[in-house]
Length: 85
Image (cartoon, rainbow, N blue to C red; front, side):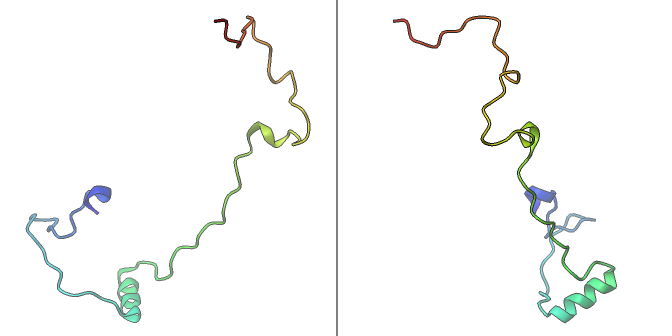
């Protein structure tokens, strides 16, 4: 918790003194009562549906069609990729 939230859970936020755990609340009904009293939501948040892959410019192109030469202009210089040694 200290690395993520920069909060030390066993240090007093007012004086910086050491704190200790007195009890764990594990009963679900008691936890709901405490959360309701504090005004916190009782139910877990709904998870959003999974997203699809990013579309970009390829969304309008067909999968089987060859690439459009207009999308890939010819460079202004000649470039030979063969090794000449």
